Image 1 (tube, rainbow, N blue to C red):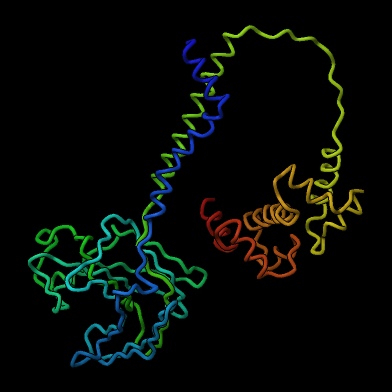
Image 2 (spheres, rainbow, N blue to C red; image 1 turned 45 degrees about the horizontal axis):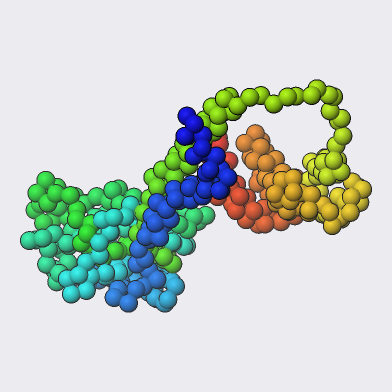
Length: 374
């Protein structure tokens, strides 16, 4: 025990104790550095083109707009009757001279999409099958398909790669079964495509804009390891210190009654906090007004809030307003705009932006999710 005590004291005195947890940050940092493989914006070796059933004898579908620049793919199409299964889409080829894209170490396909009037799309990753696929024969490319629902208030979609399946129509067309071809080889991705979903109506124009396509990793395991390791490390240190303190003679304590004297900062902070809590719903509430009514110099208010709560005046005020707005969203049926004005926001658009910045979801999504749990 004496040896443990000496080592612990040395680590504490030399500040080494506080440096060791930094080593536990290496796994998530390394994972994050290699977590994304970007397909679009386009890499030098990738090519993109559009297609439709008009290339077939009975196909009449049209691609009415297809533009590609350094940051955006805009795809507009109309499905028309003629082909048994009308289709239109665009495809990014990622293989060059039989060199394939290896995404076997990734967990998700991430899309950044502006849906415009489209509500669903089909996403395809097409792979190479040794001994079966021919580069120049489109029908022999193994299709991996996933349908994706689009919403106007969402632009980023993460789809787990294990959710992609080989469609039955492709197996039937090639007279194959899942057992015969086995698991898809994600180390041999040939292209990624986005096309219409089966629900699409005939003779209706649909538009989507894609601003990003990439393969990403799940960083959760690495971060969980780090949190557990650091927590365990500090727990063991605390345990050792408790044991050592019990072995140390207790210091002589001289009893006396402590004076209940509050510091100036605590006293001023109390007045500031009380006023903000009472008047947060005022849309024109400012540092100057709080300072005047609390009897505190306005210049001191940001300093006090930073020291006591590590927040700026705006951050502190927004926290209170958002807490009350979340309660109203959960417990009342008031319209979102009405709630925004009641808690002190002049502009409902600004309220939406602040809410999503803090909560990572829109007010409407928050209301739906909380009601679903009731």
